[in-house]
Image 1 (cartoon, rainbow, N blue to C red):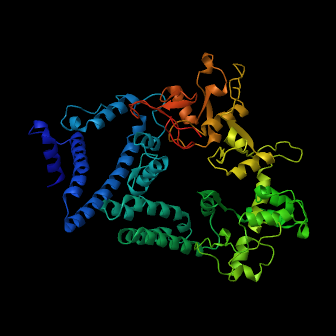
Image 2: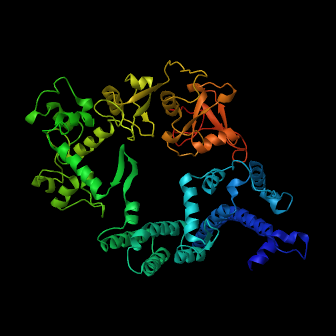
Image 3: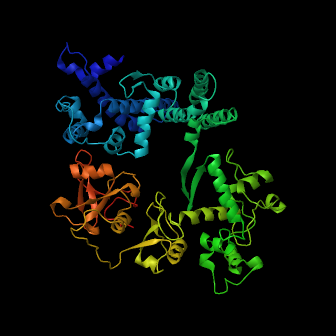
Length: 587
């Protein structure tokens, strides 16, 4: 049975023998097939006990899964080509009505709304296709963005000049249309190959080389497991890098930068890649912190600034130890579990991910100016902690952090124009501040502090505490000033964390403060009348796409458009504060 016969059978040709199949007929048939899949899959799983039929069913479901993955990319491409994100809210709401009653849509009693007769004017409902997919499908921003990008890599498309372009990776595109691998695997392979394009272009006859490498990857994705394909891509990257002595400017632009790798067990990891000149500055910084005769390399001061051992200091901790180091540091080191037999994370080979076995290579990775003792690379597998209680990498990091904590100010405490002024804001409760709670503080960017870190930062005066749940007064500027000053802005961001619209991941530093009562109509600039929103969603609040409402706890929530949330429940952005249920505590 071909597709035309399936469509005719499912739509019954609308009762007209001479009826010609239309896109609506195909869409109705696809709707019926999706409904059938949703009902048939659990029925087959519950009614069949045959292992041979289970084998067939497993393969068939995987085939359907791959076809659906391909359909997701074609749908994202179609949404981008037709500018779905510009549809008015009324049209989107009527489409949702058809999705809510698919049976009525199939039998023709309920139809899709007509396309707008004229191009939309004013602000579009969504900024782009990614935002449309994120909000209409209730998926994460990263997943929505990746679908749009994968469609651009694996499907023919039209460029910004209106010229039709073939798929950038035609061999992977063939695997996608043939169902040889899942769309996710192919999209990941295309993304990694795209990242390698600057390195490939450095070679003569780069087009032929790119085709050969894509053929290898396409064959691996089709025949091998994902881990094997990833190893192949990694080996290709290493091979490309080894064949060029001096990288091009394009390669440098793709490699250089600071990348956040995530937080695990309270440890945040950043990857830093620099040019040679910038690396020399970092080496110079490390050398200065390694010199105990300078103020920058003051061992006692660096240990105190590092935060290690703060909770373990006693009245006798400041007694002088060997070489002038505080005796309390050694006790702190022992109490905190730091010893000479712990294998350090920095002695991991970045190329293989395996522990470094060569003493010289480990010495290089640690940037230790002193020759490491033999015990470091013997049976102990340990590292060298100085008498100040810090390893060289910890000492180097502290020197860098001291520069950042200077907040771009010189010795005269004046701000240097053009330099960033990083600030540490900690949201905490009155009980935590008084030391009566065991929970941690929360920074503006969602980093949780242990009770020890919280008390240390507040004692050292390097943090700006914003205490919640206390008897605090509302700061009020009345109508004398339209824009929220920095201290009000900091307090509002501390309350909500970032943009209040659900799903938005714009950093808090990029947020604007929206007046709940419009300033032009007498609204006041008060903390309890301001809410944070990124520039895009701030415009959405003024355009009426989103509505801010005050909840019973006194804080603001967001009502989404009816086509996104027919029940009109108030929401908050769970990206910044755990839990979006309003009955749950904010912190």
